[in-house]
Length: 148
Image 1: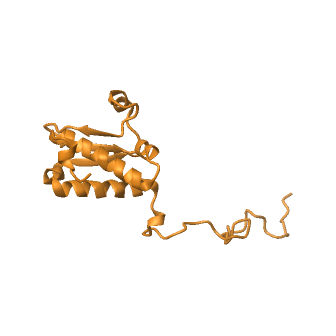
Image 2 (image 1 turned 90 degrees about the vertical axis):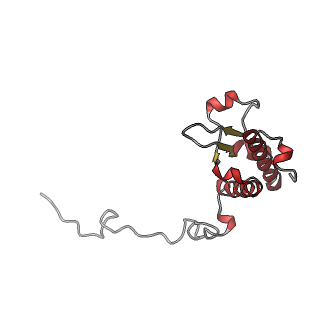
Image 3 (image 1 turned 45 degrees about the vertical axis):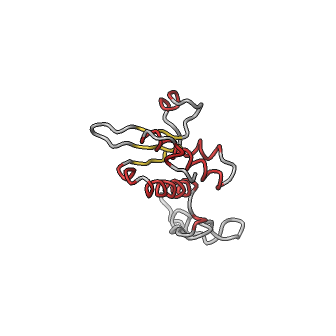
């Protein structure tokens, strides 16, 4: 025989309630700042901005770089790492082919690990970009960016 339960509804019968505070009473966790504020940018987004500024600076001096693709990858691919002169590549230039335009790649994590401050990272990113552009254009790095 089936009996009806006349007590309060079980937790399965109640609609889920929204939590307004965490279990310590401090409020819900969430972003510290709204998205457009610089503090809300991820490390990858900050790195992309830094690299973009450097590319823009070089493109103003060398307009032919507008045809070059620039990319940021977190780490080098396994085969790239084996081909590099350094234990871990910091950047790479892929020459143009009949089907593809030339591409310069920066590797974010190895660059971040070598820099102790944001200003040092900025200089390192720019130096690697200058080296890769010099390799692409067949010029000396001092010719590509005499101010750097």
